[in-house]
Each structure stands twice: as structure tokens, then as C-alpha cells.
Image (cartoon, rainbow, N blue to C red; front, side, top):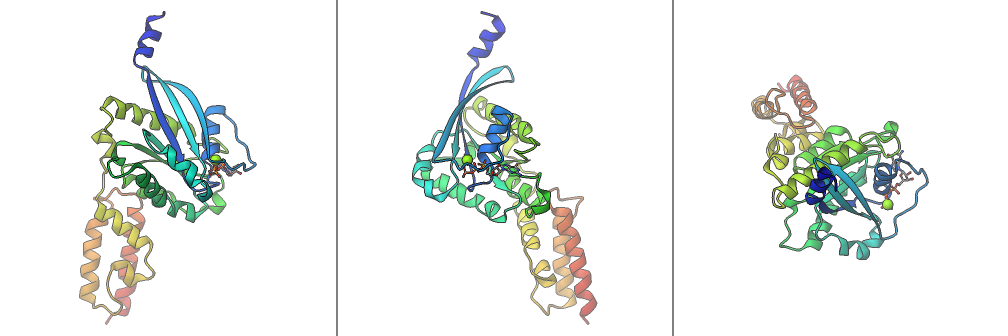
Length: 271
Ligand code: GTP
Ligand code: MG
């Protein structure tokens, strides 16, 4: 046997990955785009689970990937729940034109955690979040910084994808498999570099709160009718936290601008 081939075989890995996310977000199409290089526009809901095996060669290794493509519809919960265990990687998908599918990501993590039980360590699974259907930009309602913040604040990989055009799909799988190899080489633990987050929880929470605030008072986190001093104090705290020179969290620049504008608007009307 060719010695290179023999080496690759010796270093071969067998991994299990699953797809998760609401029905119709494009899980099956992303997998199909990567494995079969094609796109099917007609929706054919996955019934329970679709199983496939594929082989990839990467970093001098042959990887046998067992892919369990889950049905997103709640109806199939009883079928899905059997398949969470012994997973090294999760492709977690939402549709950028469907807010609800983004908001459901947390519920998917909860379902998985519940099925794995209290001993399971979700920290040692690689998650790749796919913000899918970016080709239909007209309908987009979850922007990149919102999705990226959600993913990266949890130590997950984040990709913008379109199963229709293929954009981002290969990049996602390459980075996903590479992170799983790192995990396997690190004794099944997610390496520190993969989980280290370059911003704090306080920064991520502030950006989220600002994004969801209903008015300028709310944005600065002060009560309506607050004094100039209170407004300025709240402003300074947020400005230090979110200043673009200090904060690299996705969406921090917009949040910072919104805070500056809110302060200006409020001070105009406070005697
Ligand atoms: P379930 O199996 O029911 O959980 O759904 P799923 O998440 O596997 O969705 P599927 O891949 O079957 O795709 C659902 C619909 O979205 C299909 O009509 C696809 O053609 C369409 N679709 C998937 N990905 C894309 C995309 O990137 N862009 C666009 N425009 N449509 C997509
Ligand atoms: Mg499917």
C-alpha cells in the first residue's frame, strides 16, 4: 500500500454529526449542497431522521462522517431524541428571514441538553451556527451581528450560508471538521482556543439589551424622567463598555452609536 495512504488510514477518524433547527430552515439542503453539490427548491420535510455517511480527507487524516439529519418539526421529537448521544459536532441552522427560527436556537440546545442528561458536557461538542438563506436578502430580519453575537458568545462557530447558491457552505464544513479534528486530538475536549471569546458577557448582554430597547431611556438603562446626571452616568458606563476601540463584540459599533444618539436626544429635553 502507498505509505501516505497507509498513514492517512492509521490516523483515520470516525465522527458523528447532527443537524438541528426548526423545520424548513434548510438543514437538509445545506447537507445536500455539500455532499451532492446540488439544490432542490421543493420542500420535502425530513421524516424523523435521514442518515448518511461521507468520507473527507483533511489535515492528513481520513474522516468518516456519520451525518444524522434531524427533522425540525416538533412532531418528530420522539424519533429525534434517540440520536443526540455520542455527537462530536452539531450544525445548528436558522433562516435569516424567519425570526422565530433564530429565537428557537436556545430551545434546541435545551432539548439536546435534556436528552444527554446531567453528566453530558455540551462544552465538548463543536457547534457551527448557520445563518441560512442569505440569498433572499429582501426578507432578511436577523442581521449578521445579531446571529454572530449569539453564536460567538457561546463559543460556537458562525457562518452565513445559502444552500441555494452554495455561499458559505464549503467554508462552514471545512472549519467545522477542522474544529472537530482539534477536539479529537485534544482528547475529546474543545481546545481552549476554540472556546475563548474575545468579548465579555457584560458586553454581549449590553448589546442585546440596547438592540431590544423600546426608547432612549430604556437604551441607556435609566428610568423615564431621569436627571442629566443620571443620564450622563449611564452613558459613560456604556461608552466605556462598548467603545469600538475596546469592544470587538459583533454589533458593538451600532450599539455604541445608538447610545450616543440616545444621550443626545435625552439631554436636549432635560432642563
Ligand atoms: P425539516 O426537514 O422539515 O426539518 O426542514 P429542513 O430544515 O431540512 O429544510 P430543507 O432543507 O428541506 O429546506 C426547506 C425549504 O427551504 C426548501 O424549500 C428549500 O428549497 C428551501 N431552502 C433551503 N435552503 C435555502 C437557501 O439557502 N435559500 C433559499 N432561498 N431557500 C432555501
Ligand atoms: Mg430536513
